[in-house]
Amino acid sequence: MKTKTLRKALLTAAVGSLLPLSQASADTLFDAFANGDGGLSFRYRLELVDQDGFNKDATASTLRTRVDYKTQEYNGFTFYIEAENVTEVFADDYNAGAGNSPGNTQYPVVADPQGTEINQAWARFAFAEGQSIKLGRQRILLDNQRFVGGVGWRQNEQTYDAISGNFTLGQSHLFLAWVENVNRIFGDDVPAGDNDNSSLLANWSNQFEGVGKLVAYYYDIDNKDVPAFSTTTYGLKFAGKHKAFGYGLEYASQSDAANNPVDYTADYYRLDASYAFEPVTLFGGYEVLEGDANKPGAAFRTPLATLHAFNGWADKFLATPQAGLEDAFIGVKGQFEGFKWQAIYHDFQAEDGNASYGDEFDAVVSKGLNKYLTAMVKAAFYNADEYATDTTKFWFMLSARF
Image (cartoon, rainbow, N blue to C red):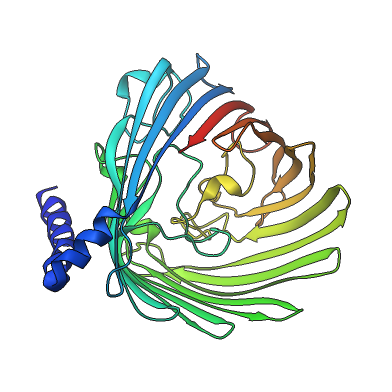
């Protein structure tokens, strides 16, 4: 733990060391800070979980408060800081996970631990139009966050201590990042909340006018604290739209890397299609994460992903089953008088073998109440077969941004 604390201190000092370099014109730098833009947001959420196998249902009532400030650009430099606090209010009958609430193991997990953290603190230098480098604790959201994301659904967001670059030329964009630490949703109070990394993230995309977007990526993850997360993944994705029809194709290949104790390779496939009928859109798809029923640890995994957005909102597949996963899904979404809604059905099967993992129905409705407030009601119903246990989740959320 002392090594991690020292490493974070050095990273913070590296960000801070940019400040004196920019103070040659102190008055202008002062104006950049004085005329910056600040924000304040609140997100209250009530999460209820009824899960077979637990003596009691979980009731998690939490409030996230977030404050941020970004300076104006000065000689290409911009500075940003964001702090957040998660507090239990009204009810705390839940297990926050990863050892955060050892006295509450009789409840299902709701991964929203209490705590206060610096969520982001970075300095960015834009040295040309569309070209910039960012150093410090930052949010990294790549594509649909299937491989690298911020887990924004949880109250404590996942962020990265990293140096990253964005480079745009015409219709092409290249993102590169060297990640030194992953600040996970479980918070600083438990070891699972911080993962020491030496990881390279590379993501290139090109927009083809009137056809679609091609993405190529390479993610080399060296997780020194959780060896099973150390993987090398490369893949291609193409998505586009023609009139009312939308489509997407993706393939990735993964193998063990660095200190991973399991020697394996596994593939990933995804097919998406949608059709817009005013005022609703029908959509569906098929996603496969390969596994090996006879070899533990050989399944395709996505340790940096925003996993809640995939394979059902009940979060039964945050870790890929040993025999892999096939997820066939179909849904409908739309808007009506200011309400946004969506319903989706999943059928889950083992990729290796004939096991049925069950099915799930999810639904959500949200509405902007005014320019500051948004309300959401959401539910997930997972029916187990040869995997996990029956689980029902319900959420009520109220968000405010000022």
